[in-house]
Image (cartoon, rainbow, N blue to C red; front, top):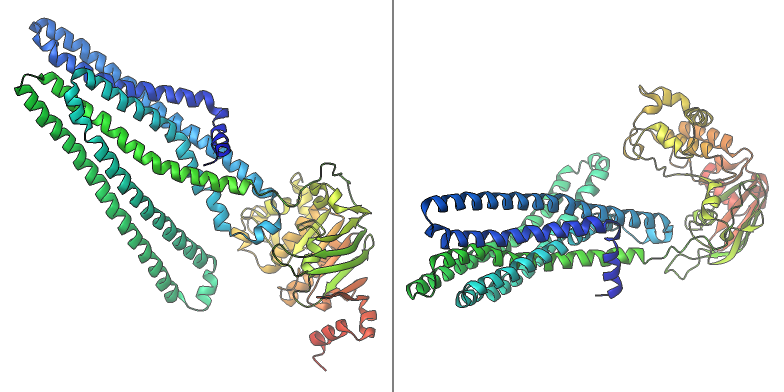
Length: 581
């Protein structure tokens, strides 16, 4: 357990320290009330009952009213602890969620290449919940338990020493039993988490791929898989409930044994004239006050383990430094013209020694329309991903307008680049919101104009709700061509000086491809454009075509020039349009 981690954990209380200490104050008052009431009962049974009837009645009324006031005070304390105490935890959880989500936004593609979304989500949901529960309940439970336990011992010790030792003799047994069963329950509950996580993953996988399931008519097979996972979860639950039953029934039995032990010892001491009935009643009333802290402290050990483990995982993510970030003296170049130079550029992915690109050199003039073709795995997408610094070059440099892109502010660099991909990502929401994502301060008129230029306006107004149409998760209610035109409208609205089309039409049918291709050509006018293409028909008019292989750039030139070379490009062209010779 690192001291630095503990200090960092405590630091999250800082913005809410006033509310936190007030909460602890109410916890102290509330636990103090539970210690006072048995003493009043003892006073009534020992002193008040021997008074004259009228005096006794008057005193009982006063003490009853006083106890009612104490109960009301305890109720107020519990309300404050329950509401505001939980709000302290919720606010800290929100702060930590904001911190880790902000950190997620800074991490590069290289980080996400090696992570599962479910793993990252667990850091921001279940882990943070465990931490907030610890930060809320931990200090409260410790304070309340200490006050009740020590207070009960001191008070009972003053009442009768021998009886105190009898009552507290059961405490080590209670603690050991609770602690041993609690450890077994913890293991069982961890199994539950694993099983429910696996089951949730299976359900998510099924629902995400429901169209594939139905297209292959494999519902029965999916049901069998689900039943298998579901039964494993029930088996894990069965084990945890067995331990839970032993835990709660055993503790209840031991607490009852404390009561019986105190009752028997008290009766014997009354017969021996060593104890009065009022003191026995006091001991019986205090039993819960010193057994409840045991249960709280045992539960706290588990809560601490879960919460601290969650915090360590939280810190593990925050300790990952973004491998792509601004230099201290990074510049904002404003709007770039788009002249791009690849100079001896090499690149390999993290933990992969084999280079995807090796000493690549390329000059692209401002406003050029450059097409990149080649076999899968040659590095076409990787090459284009280096321009907006989704990854950083391993060697060499990329310059835009003569400036090394690593010397530019990331935000300003990426504001100059628009990307249209094959796999279009649209957010749940309306058409208007998705297009406006290209420039958040754009007016409705500007959004509509961008849609017109992307040939999307006509199909949008064809919907009953027009631009206010909800497109569903990932645009599930739209066709591939419609989604692609919305992504193009988004880039029109952004108005960048550099464009990257990453196989933007390869997944479309011929009719949709023609419409989208027309939109892409409109978008590319006056901009430096990189086009990654499998369909060579879409790039015949490109000013320059680059043929990229695993050995680097093998050919470059116009469509006609490359056909005359009778090299790789001519072979690819013949494969697509004329068939192999």
